[in-house]
Image: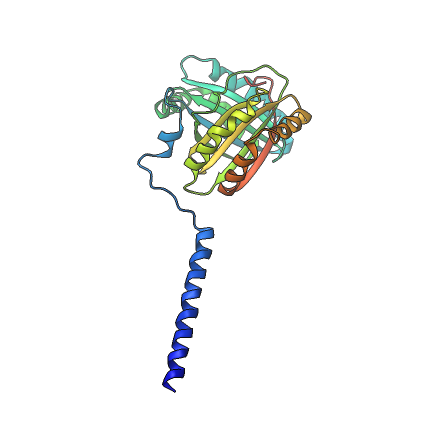
Length: 266
């Protein structure tokens, strides 16, 4: 009897130990080990030679108001862009063609970071034309949101370009704690996507939806986009980098956008 109980205890302990090892192995599949960092990822990944801050705006417009919305934007936004008293630049302004419909996207750069952003906001509160523009705009919108971004050090700085082009904004929601890893891989991956001058800018969020990455690309048309993206798969090393970056992503979205006539990016 004693021998039977001892044998049963051994089997129970062995089974429990096996389950413990099995649970530990399963956890290792789903729990990502994040190395401790001694600095914020914004300091490690952003460009050191500039202190530019970017604001990305998404405006969902009432379908019947899109034409009127575009008209007032093309009248007012270039005036702010051209006024030397505002330390900001309109990088680009678009309507979404494929993706979320009846949507406007605006990208601003603030030369001087957060102090420049604050200065612009304070001055716009005293700008009667802008206040009238905001009031008219509010009647045309269903919703709006924005994000404050920094640019990756290894990406091109967005500069005006002639057209006609279509633009793709690829947005990635990363798993928390993986931004450094993403940056390390894309610092190598970007060289595979420079042949056609399609890389416009790469950004990561600081305020708003966090752990967001945005890559902005320019193509002559949709077929050119397809050809360039397919060509990347024939370059040695691209497949490996995609393999390692995909697990870092929780969600991703692609917008194909058409620039407005007054956009510096055409």
